[in-house]
Image (cartoon, rainbow, N blue to C red):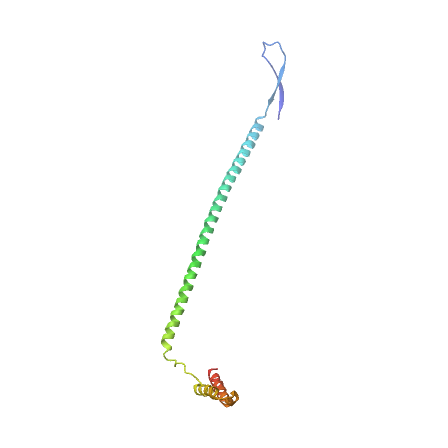
Length: 155
């Protein structure tokens, strides 16, 4: 593809016969080299463009992730606030219902009455007047029996 030929320097008027080598390139090779250079430049330009686009896309993805995370945290906090408010409301509702039921049914419940009152009074009088505590043994037995009956009724 390459060939050399000698060109005389200085023209025909010059007495010197020095020659300079000249490189002649085949026309097809020049076009092929130019096409390769153009293709290489195109590929390099595309790589540069892809890198710039990739960096921009990466930046946009990071921004979107940060925005999404901030929104997610806000939603989580809002949901937690809603749950706390719902819990407080449920507690208030249950407390109000308990108060209503107590107000409604407490008058139906008989007031508590003292049990074994007679046996207790007799035992206290015996202890107060007896010279020996063993003299009140029968009163202690009656009070114990009464207390057992009351306990069985409540069970």
